[in-house]
Image 1 (cartoon, rainbow, N blue to C red):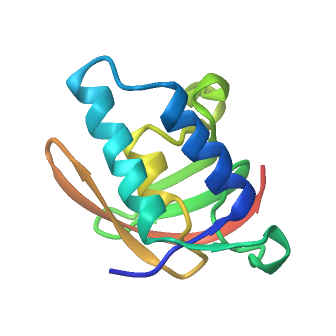
Image 2: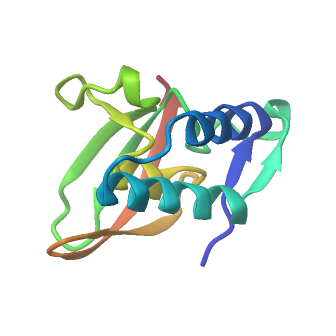
Length: 127
């Protein structure tokens, strides 16, 4: 499993999000548990030490699904800012949690009910 990088500010924001919003449903608890697992395995660094090609909150990621070649473009945001139609995906969405901390060139797996997808980070931009 690749090591991911998370800014200290994002780490603090996301830990506060998890603390103030305990999951009401099993699905919410599962999603929050997945995010917590990612945060606990991350290298936490000051923002100045995070490369500009790392997916953090409010950065836009250009992803390519390796099997089909399908392209996904999303800006990673907090739940209250999410709007998939506008290309903003919540950090608590399974894909949002899966993409956190990866950088250009990395390949990661996104597990869905229908199976797993391998995605490559093609580019990362400021959201």
